[in-house]
Image (cartoon, rainbow, N blue to C red; front, side):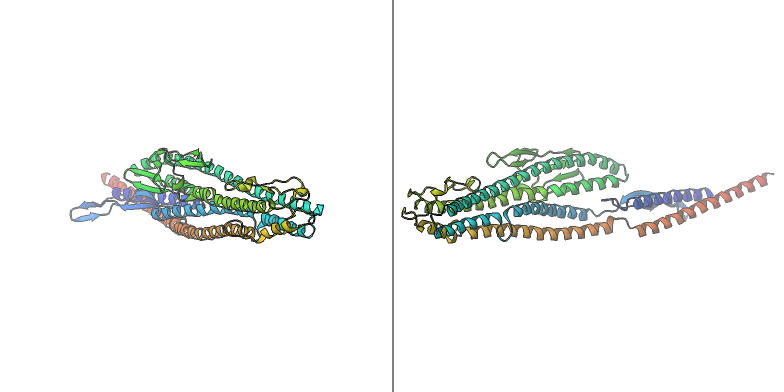
Length: 460
């Protein structure tokens, strides 16, 4: 039946429970600004009542567990959106570098150089034997070759830089998966013993979010343990074991490819994260721009050479190639002016000194289709437009994903974040309960002393 001893036990447990509540609340307040922290709350359960005949007496409460408040489905959605946002960010950064190289809506230095070359040829038609004008043609041609070379070199250097970033990102993936694998058995041990693993789970969630910025990740939590894989199914973490990714150079492109621990090339299977954005820019977009640039260099060089070899120089000699240029890949990087003296400019159409017939034909190439059915200016405009469009689309995509990620993080904050107002209210609640429990203990102590004194009086 009910007794002072039983009441004392109930009050003592209440005192301990309320003290735990104060500790937990204090910890929440201390971590209010800690990134990734999930607020904790005590979970109390009513202790089994005591039966005495037909009567039932309450037996207080016990602290069952300390629970971290989190929505695991929401956390997975945040990881997925983080992957897409990081993907767009990496691609956008690469495309902005390319845009700075190629130029703005006016076409940049390359279009200026090509227009300058055709302007010099137009000027040559007015005075084909003028040494200064002939030198201008030679210099303008050298400027065209130099701009093609510069753009090709810089685009290839950008690819090489992206390749280095792919290597660095792969190393970072391996470091993060090793850290996650080290946390898994610690979390499992605490959970198995009924203890709160919230702090370690927060650390793991933060690491997974960092991993999601680098590569597409699938999270699988089952009775068999915790597993991370790529979207393509390549294992990254299984329980306490991490599986390292490696890189190898492709013999054809000399670019790094990513391999899973089983030796499978997963480069094309990476679907999100910084790695996907970097690979997309490195292996798809920049090579496409280089192809357009090579086609323009080859088309312009061949068109000028065809006309130039049909004319005659200042000495009446048959004109030779104006540009040394190859067709196909590498044309922009290798194009050079073939003639070394302005006297070799083939302005004449009949070998006479004053003839400007071939200079007129050369100048007319400006308005002729030289590559892909388009003029040089149209080809440059198409290239500039494509780069600008890719930048614009990536920027719009990233803005939308930033907004979506912010909304998800706001939802997480509403669920798992610390509200100082709520914690202040909890603190007052636990404080009052603690004081009430302490008063019960004081009262029981007083009653106990009274009972003891009554017993002592009866014996005397």
